[in-house]
Image 1: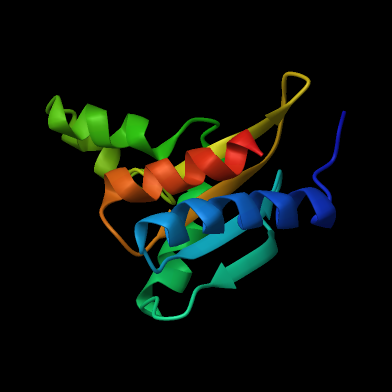
Image 2: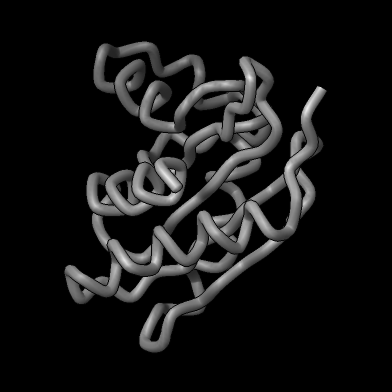
Length: 128
């Protein structure tokens, strides 16, 4: 099984930052490993400090439940409110699992702008 490296994490954060900067969006970007432990974090200039914990929580939720956090948001919109009681579940777009060779090796979480914009930035990081 592959492991997430600090170098890979930094590359994803840089790609995500480029996406955020190109749109003028100050955000916090967090990368966690497959156990939900923080590997790397970047708080862009002007990003609200409240987004630090949110970005980490989105990344942890994405790896803990092995799905994008947007999936939970969709389920709530569909009326499945019982999922709100799941510990560690974040029902807001912006958290994505990192997959390598079919294995989930970590996750990225972004917070600071709208959830759709956070998701766009996270996707740019994953694409790296």
